[in-house]
Length: 181
Image (cartoon, rainbow, N blue to C red):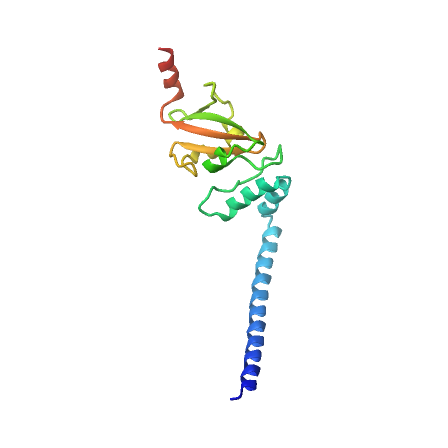
């Protein structure tokens, strides 16, 4: 077999392979698109587009950090929804390193969570009336990206504040009794 014949067979094989690959890929993505459209017709919300739209006003640095959370499967969980009142991402867990970088745009506050009676207090030892407005649903994420099983770092975009939440395994009421005695 001559070199010319080998080259012709190589080119024909490459063309057949490309055509088959194109057809299989096209069929696959048509099926994916059809399933997506059927989901929209059934009334399933498109959460991804809502999250992207409502987080569109983030700075490049904020966007990059959020995007990393979506792709770093060993990292923190991405926000689950959007705070409809302020149209920003809900509070989410951040790594300790991000908290210690002390980004000038974010204030930093320390909170204490008394696990005995599930009470959250500020650094003045005053009860926080609505913990979810500050730290969202992240009081169950202690130890996540903090290196300490009794600590979690939470970013609240609406308040432009990073919170360091420390957990104590006693009740707030028991702590008050001890302080008063």
